[in-house]
Length: 304
DNA sequence: GCTTGCGCCTGAATGC
DNA sequence: TGCATTCAGGCGCAAG
Image: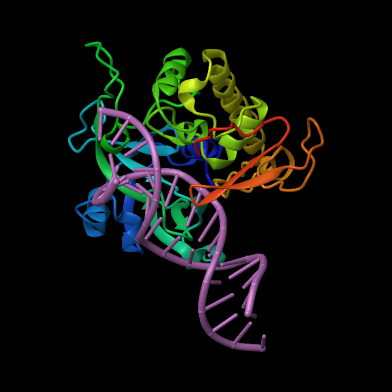
């Protein structure tokens, strides 16, 4: 599943292979891929044609390409927002190329330079594209501050890699909540970019159980798990970045990190790398949580 | 306002 | 063998 590190790898790929190119034609093959573009797929196709893709940006798991303005004004006023959902991929393919990914091709962009097309492939269709206005984030108030985000991203919190991420403020916001720690880590309005896998890994590193009530946690404990989340995602990014291929913007979630470096996620019954106790699996919000029974004892009055 | 739970979707894995 | 069920997951929205 694409989480922050995978999305960042894609962003970097787009920066190299898509930025600066002008769209000749956009085709949406599956209406669900454009469901977040409220005026519909035809409108999206029409409005993308002729636009030049500028910088690739990211916040949490949201990715967007700034677009040249209609009247060549500066700065850009719109962006093509891409969310990969659970199975989304952006691939670069030579024009006319067809392969197994073709079956789940949901949209494609052809370019005026006749170079590789940009494919949006998404098996489970939880992802999608939208063209949106750029707005000023709620926490940006300085008059000369030019930072913008797409409208649908405005409610998403900054991620731990954002230069303006304020860890101390996030720790306090988290402790004010009345919920379970893992739920809070997954809440993209508190801190973005953390999904199920990295939440479990961060909790394991911080030796905290995900059902611990947030309001009972100490400031240092919450800080520890936030720092762990950043560390584990940073390591995944370092590994994912190495598998980048010039003609394949890798987002398949199968980066080496998944195979080699997970301590607890998906490791039911395997020994905890720290103490050797078999990793347990718990049902959580219609999905799974993995933890070490010894390093991460369940709280008596837990809150999943 | 804050917290919780559901539905969206497909294909692999599992159960009968 | 074949059919049915379960599961995975992020996100938006409705309900509590």
